[in-house]
Length: 497
Image (cartoon, rainbow, N blue to C red):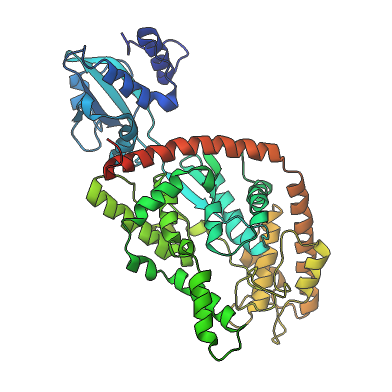
């Protein structure tokens, strides 16, 4: 009889795998235990009487056999206080794990399934942890990554992933489909995608961590299909109100307008905008929602320009849930996201020439931006030419001395990257009152040049085959999860029975 006991040296899970094999011939692995178990139950349902599956949640692993007494009397047996009975014919492999996760709500407790046969308990017992909650994040494929990207986004993401991977699954994806929303050089896209993965690896991403998943959005086709389904439940007005779309559209308009000198230039500019701004840019938030909802992501670190998109994701998820039942796990509200990721937010490095704006690759002169690919000597010169002020004293004052404050932040960040435990306050105190800006700039320039040299050496040492293997492995796993979600949605909207 399955559930008869744990042999010496076995875990409970290992004993279940062994006993199920002996009794049924099924080979069950811990990660597949739920689907195979429900398949077994359904296949044998007609020939076995009085069968049900009882779901219950407990804070401790169960030892020995279960009976009605210790189930009903055990303290903390049920998170909701009462057992829930599920008829076998109402369970399907796709929805089962999802419904357990929704009920469990990621409390971190264990759950078990007890198969009842002829009113006897413990004929078969399965025990495993619930799915870990998901943190999902990504950075666009980009060949020209600058130190603002690196210190403001990439490094904080990697540090967060390493620190939280014990408790969360980290979905770190390369959103290559989003690259099409603005003009790009398509001949360089594939290399840019791999370069992105190389940069993450050189920055310290542990590819051997099984809780960290690195994958390309385009390799999981469910992203596109779910986005289309969500499109059909999204109002035109919702997308029209997205401020990022408005900002990018008007920015493009201004750029075109400045290049057309005819009296009818504004109308011509609008004509160009109407053909140059893609529907993909307009619908960008819907694809972003699909990226998140496919994996039941609870937390998604976003910048200020993406908070509206995250709120839309919550809105469309709740809308679909109201209409079709519990299809999606809804991400946490923006305020809870900020609280959760508070210490994971990176500093925003400013432009070296115009420290009032953030460092951006749109800087046409290139003098205010330092790329990770810059020659260290070239970067040294850029730091030495950085805009400062006339106050003549080093201190951290972002309002009155944005240039000096920016250099203090950069110096702190490159020192932290080198392994030094230093804070911005400590760096500021070290150089506070220094009245020779040239000497201070030289200190910053020397350490930035050293950082670039070290990083470029790490980048050159990255084994691309290891990256390819990680991508392939993660994409295989993510396809399984994404397709389960898509299948569930297809059934809900009438595409499947």
